[in-house]
Image: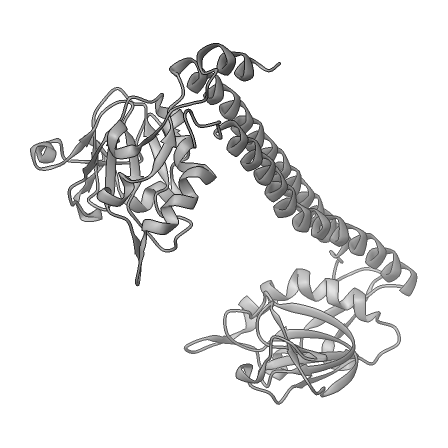
Length: 395
């Protein structure tokens, strides 16, 4: 029998009492202040938007401050109060809460509520995350341009009120789970950063060729055919038989194609210049301000050139680009772009190494969100189990 099951048997053999939030505690609306009121130090404050971006389940320090002289005109949260965002962009986010554990009182924005209650403060914060709370909240939130919920409606939400000993046991378990989840995120992100550093190191090492040496050099115009497409961005579809390359990393779709070849695609102007590169082998459509580079010289592997261009073209562009309202690439600039042409065996070795590293980084980049989501799902499942009780005297 688990520790919580033992405590429930000891303290609540007939079930846990459920009560309305308005019966358990008091909701107090904050008072308005703006970002222009922030100062370097003084009275700690929480703006409703910060609850979504800067705070987790609990906090004992604030990220922003107000002049202490404003204290008398503001509403203040005390230690153990819950600070709740009463406004949000969607129904899922509204009512995100943070337990205030700091010793000093803090000011709370007028799009927040202070919930003064008898719960363990972190238990109260976990309750506001739980499906028990979320499912009831949906019935009471008002949706327009933003989602809002009134204190009167919050007061109607019914929650379990287990004995304090049980609350603290649940808090200890969930706090440990949150800590383990945070450690895993940090480890995965550190691994991805390490892989990217390794990737960048190998890229630079493998694609650096002295201008004087054994490696042959030529201009891109001598090695490849350079052209553009004919389509506008708004012709792109979310579905379609053929890839449609525009001036961003996003690949759209079209029902027809312009080219059937192996080519390197790069943006001709806009924010994607020097950053957007695609390698295509087959049928595709192309934007009118994106360049296609089709290698025609048999001494240059297209995939080798793709890696080389992706690694060095940004610097070359910075030295050579035409600047008006946007940065743009002209065809003569591409034609003059100097390209190393090492031995084909060396090119293949470099391509194989960089493709392998590319796959490792891409696999890790793709798996990172999935792994984090899986852990979050696991945490949510156990949190909701821990916060669901048989109701005392339920019919």
